[in-house]
Image 1: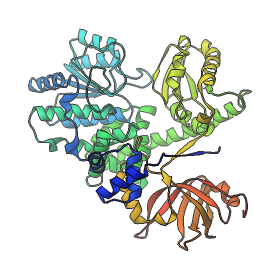
Image 2: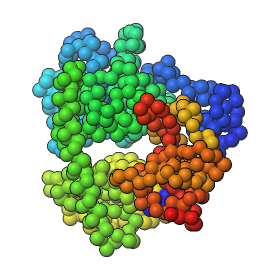
Image 3: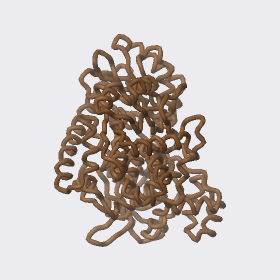
Image 4: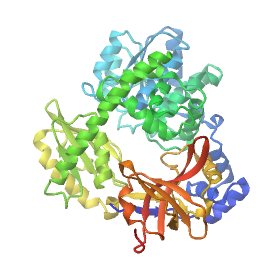
Length: 570
């Protein structure tokens, strides 16, 4: 499917001003301007995301009440139950809070609900478990903002609750001791994009300030915060950027045994990036909650013995391999099912049901179906006599709004712009498929059904160098809202050194017409274009990366797409 290259509105003048005052490359100044940076102060803050720039945690609504209740619990020997979600954000939150509170008390129990028996969020089963443990206080992390009935149930059992969440609240807040959520309408906290681990960290930061202790007590937790932040795909801006940078620096100097064991199979233990967290660590930790017990992930993160960490990581690696197998199997089945549908060529949405699809994997497969067919996708499986599903969306189409328009056919649903979950009766499936297709067809635009590559700028080939790559790293860590810049270079020529790699990858060797210097590139999945490559007039769309081989570092292009001239093909 042809991809659109969408270029930024260039900010040449502002970029030039920033580069002159900051003594940086003019192209980097333009990249800062593209990220909404308008002042010298904002630029300095962005380029120096240090921990002293974190906001005062007491600016968050209910923080004083949360800290005072936590301090009371520790002073009086209350039993504390740490309750987290089963994804990476939730498991890192629980591990982080447990490691911190162990400095003050041994009266701690961890609990993560079963994805299938209890579902997302605080459950009455979990509260019953807390009562069995004689817990006096529950700290709920990455969940709880809509748990009105469940918190009321906990209150009946004389268990206090502190909520650390980052999801959108409902009309009524739970009657907890404290509800920490930057998205509360009455919360004036300046950063609304924290993940669950980030909000939980703010409680830790506030507690440290309350006790007038050295903040270095929470420095060992920075890696866990960074993993939760990276894997929850929140914007890599503001406090998230600060915490990501600090967490990566810690991981690259003091890698905890559990993470080292996970990353051993990637043969990478230093110069870790956000991508290593998202694609290397995240899937392994997530596999625990998808296919087994998410507490396996918490245990691994807290493990201090290297040999035991390797054993525990091995268990999760096996779970992740099982997840990959199911992913590939279901993806193949979903593709076949969709392409054989009479609506394949006409529908603007994809809604598929198969009773045996694994619930813990269909969300991943739905994302792959979106990438493949560029349509909003809902995949459904069966559980306890009902259909449960995961929805994923294309760029700029709000799938939660689309599902909301069909809510009269659903038992339950929730989510956000790009992802959602839903439950319905099997008898309503056909009606829902028709209704959802009608809703999508009314609102989706043709351009939303073609993949987009956001392009930072047109880059002269002579700028491509290791020194320029180092300049770009001043913008790191990269993530949503601060993507690794994508460049386009035009009218390149094949040097004759381009060749095919296995697995349909392309190794490129190109040069500018006015420069004999060969530029190296790798195009993953672009191998089918090898025999269509021209000898000239080649436009490449790429990011830059450092490639180290036998101790020598060079810069290479990671080619996302290419366009060729009509003549001079091989």
